[in-house]
Every structure is written in C-alpha cells, then in structure tokens.
Length: 387
Ligand SMILES: [Zn+2]
Image (cartoon, rainbow, N blue to C red; front, side, top):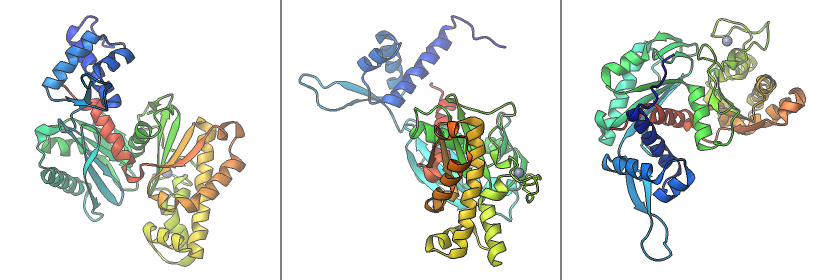
C-alpha cells in the first residue's frame, strides 16, 4: 500500500486548504474567528488559506447581520460562480440533467426521453449533445466546469467508468467514460442511481443519520446504503441490489435472468403487468398512477397489492440491516399516499419488532432531484482541485 509521505508540506497544505474550503462551504457565511474557534486549525493557518482562496476566486467576503456597533464583522462564503458541476441522471424512460453552481444550488435543468429505438451509443451521443446545449444556454465553457457526475440505474465499474449492466435499460458493458472523455476534458464521477440518491438525501435532509437505505422504485428497484456513516459498496462495488433478492422461488422471470426477484413484484413493471392481467389493458405506469388517483377500482386493487409486496422487501431490508431510516423514492412516489398504508401494515405485522421499532419510513423529500443532488456533492468532493 502506498503510504502518504509524512512531512510532505505541499500535501498537508492542499489538505488543509481543501478542509477549510469545505468547512466554509458547509457552515458559511462564517467568520475567520468562528472558524478558528470551532475547528482544529490555527488562526494563522485559516488566515493564510483564506487569503489564497479569496485571491483565486473560490471564496468571497460578505457582511452579515447587524453588528453591535463599530465595524460590521466580515464573513466568508463560497463564490457560487467560480465553478459549475454538470449532473446527469440516466433513467429507463428519461434523462435529467442539472447544472449546479459551486454552492451546490441548481441553476439549470433539462429533461428529455431515452430513445428506446436507438442504440446505447446513439443515446449517449444524444445526451452529450443535450449537455452541450444546456451549457451553451447558460453561457458556460469547459474551463468553468469542475466535473461531470453521471448516475445510471444498474451495475457499474466505477473506476473504469463502465456501465456493466442495466437490465431495465437493456444496456451492458457500455464505456460511458470513453464517450464523455472524447467530448469533455473534465473529471468524471459515475455512480449507481440509488447510491447517488442516498448521498443526496443524507447530505441535504438527514446529515445526522448514519444508517439508512434509499429504495428507488422505478421500472426496477435499486437501493443505496449508508452504513455507519459511509456509502456501503461491498466487495464488488455494487452492494445494495435488493431488487434482486429472491422473494418467490416460483416467481416470474426478472430482467436479470433470475426468477421471483423482489423487483418483479414491487416495481412499476409489476404494476403494469398486474394491471394488464386484471384488465387486459396495456397501460404505462404514469397512466396507471392517474387511474389510482382518480379512484379506479382495479388500479387501486393493483396498487394495494404493490404496496404489500413493497412492504415484504422492506421487511427483509429492515431485518437484515436494521437501518434507522428507509427512504422510498423513484417514480413510484407519485402514488405514495396510496402505498403508505399497505407498506406500514406489512412492516408492523412481519418485521422483527426489535429492528422495525428503530426504522423510520419516509418517502423522498428531494423527489426527482435526489440522485442529482448526490452527484453534485460527489463531484464537488472528488473533483474540485484548487489552482
Ligand atoms: Zn432480478
């Protein structure tokens, strides 16, 4: 293992600079005095790094609030226009792109459909064209960008920037990194959609929760796990595939090739198939959501069965991991008011009481932005290089 050279002054310098910048990002506007009082950095170290960060444009000084007389105190805050982050969430039906500023506030968004009839490569080319359009619309050039974050609903080779398998998209061994690196000279972050979403929820809404699972229910089911305060990846880097735990050994075939996976019984695909079986009508998930909200008896019957099936999988997660919090997200939340009762009933009846009493159930507070917020945070943390 490579050891960091002790006494490498430049390394320590960079580490301190990045550390101070992150603290100001997290707690700003904040004064130099407050920083010194609340961190392990000396006043001199803070003063030096802050000066450099102001000179290079990463920080700005601002006056905040009233002073009790005399000079108003000077506060430090991140300069939102110093750099921008592109985030792209590739779903099975649509792609959502958002540009964030350096304060991680969303500045521009575009949503467009996946070309079902197009090859994966042609879809990626179309996504890149849309990225360039979005940047152009904002008047941004490559040198203003910190990096690009991409989330996909499937298994990944994170270091190789490869989408290994996305069963519901029908894409496999797709070298996403190559496509983007040909067009942008920028750092990339590739992440599983549910992993990005759990990071987004934690950073924005649940910073105190150290054990939580985000269950993203769309055409399939993906899960992101925060375990003891960190994203849990497992040996393969692809932990969290609870969508493919086998619930029914005699169950129907899953896109992964197995039978009776949870996602065959608790996803949008289930909703579509079950409604089709009941009515012989082949409707989209969005259409079925509409019917549920209109009180259509058959749609309600199917959504109730769905809620019980979702509950069964959540029982397995709660019994297996004992999280403090389970967040259900994805398109399915469009009918969350109709799912809540059934899910809670199954959790109350079937989960081990010792674990279920500790596990709070919530629906996503960030809705379609959960994964994009997570990506922005990841790019900010992994790609920001001070120069
Ligand atoms: Zn499966």
